[in-house]
Structure formats: structure tokens, C-alpha cells
Image (cartoon, rainbow, N blue to C red; front, side):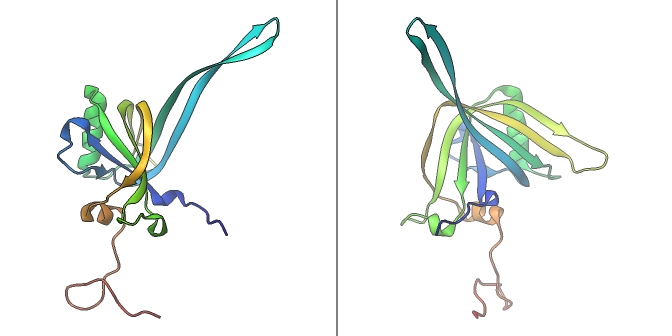
Length: 172
């Protein structure tokens, strides 16, 4: 029977394109993102009927997160938006049963630019950030490796009660 895909299991990782020698990093407290594809379709009326001229594929990702007091990834993204620097972005689906034989997670990879950066500070709510990542060319699908630090940023693992907190525990 098909299972529902949980949005909380899809995260975004980012890296400056110029810093490919470093690991990608997660923007903390991500609340929502939307990966959208679109293309223009121009209707041309002819004497024989309407025909459609198909435009190029366009993709973008809207991003929303609650601000953390300290988040180097948020600072890097804001800097890239201000300077117009090219970024790499991965949408990684963190589902154990979807891993490939090498332990990699399904992912969509894209390069592009942030066309906006908004810091919202409401008197009654948490401070948030939002942005829009404009994809250059076409996003690519594949599988991505997560480092131990990236996996820890997603969710801490269960630790046992014994000294050292090794993974494990009572099964039952």
C-alpha cells in the first residue's frame, strides 16, 4: 500500500558554488519550502485553430524558516542574496526506506541565485526569514550523501542511558 510522503522529511542544504571544497549546510528551523516548475504556454490563434508554443522550463524554490539566534547558513544565504553569488542547493528526502544501496538519500540538485531575502520581526511571533531561490538551467535528480554533522542537524539520534550515550537500547 502506498505511504504518504511527509514534508518534514524533505530538507534543504546550501553551499556557495565557489566553496565546493566544503560540505553543504542546513538552514536551521526550516518551516516550509516549495519547489515549483513552470513554463509559459503561448496560445496562437490560427485560421485552423489554436496552437500552443511551449516556452522553456523555469524552476524556483520558495524558502521559509524561523530565525535562530546563531546560524552561519542563514548568514551565508543573506550575504549571497546581497552580493548576487551563485549557490548550490539540495532538496534531500530523509527517509530510511528510500536510501539506495550506498546509503544515499534521494535528492534534487540545483544551482542558482536568491532573488530576495526578507527578515520578518513581528511583535507577537517568532522572527522569520524567507527567500526565493531561482534555479539556473534544469534541476537534476539523484542521490546525496549526508555527513554525520548533516544528519545530526536534521535530527539527533537515540542515545542509550549508559555512559557515553552509545546508540542502542532496549528493543521491545
